[in-house]
Image (cartoon, rainbow, N blue to C red; front, side, top):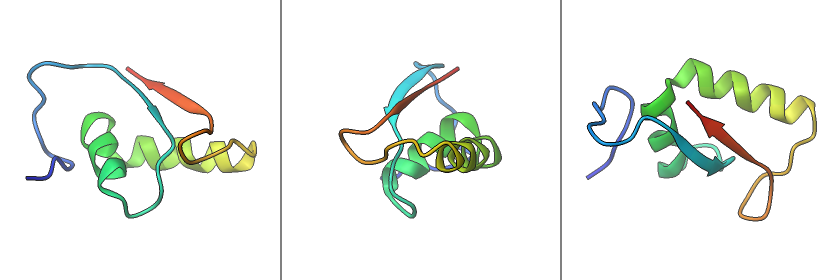
Length: 63
């Protein structure tokens, strides 16, 4: 079972998470919560500012 954009969350409305690899299932989960356009814009800004990705990188708080 995958949670991907269009999924209706019933329990959470916020998330603290790392920046995930492109095409990963974790990225799909984050896009499902906040919307693909919003997340990809955040990733673009993170890359421009040289944020660190992967498990020990920077993180984001999604409202």
